[in-house]
Length: 247
Ligand code: SF4
Image (cartoon, rainbow, N blue to C red; front, top):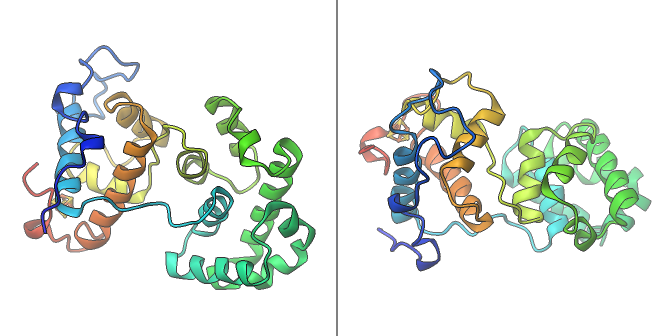
């Protein structure tokens, strides 16, 4: 089914592309496609949105649930994360201070998400940080500038760039573009950058060529994940049927 472009994203068109040279990203880098980057980024969004429609990410009832999900989803599928979160909910512990108080239960509760000892340490470290710095309150966190918040999150053991940016975008609602393996796969296959380009450079590339709107970044990342799962698989991509086969 072809979805209509949501009016909320209507401004996000080729006309809104900043001119090359007006950004801080070095568009002359040999690792990127110098002329086609803005068009490709915008056109891909339009095609994906037209084909898939809104994805309603991130699954989670509260910002804290989103944060927990972002930490548990490392190296596993969402079904397993969902089971782990359901276990936490069943014990009525999906609240920062309560979960921290009962942190000894965390390994058993999150076991379905895999690597549960490691993830338990990561989640506990995050809880310590969140409670110590922000009293476990997302509203306190929202008062902190994005760059400082990002540095803080990256300082929490086990929180890497993708997890930090997922928390910033989906829980704190900051305009930070999340780069994952799917982003890298799809856009390197289309020549936007070499597969070995760094995380920060890819993030800058997208952020420099899209309006700074959290809802837009939210939708785009979700669409990329959907496209990679359904079409742009690691082996034998289904290009003929893919919404991006024309770009
Ligand atoms: S499946 Fe093919 S057309 Fe679709 S994103 Fe991947 S490489 Fe591009």
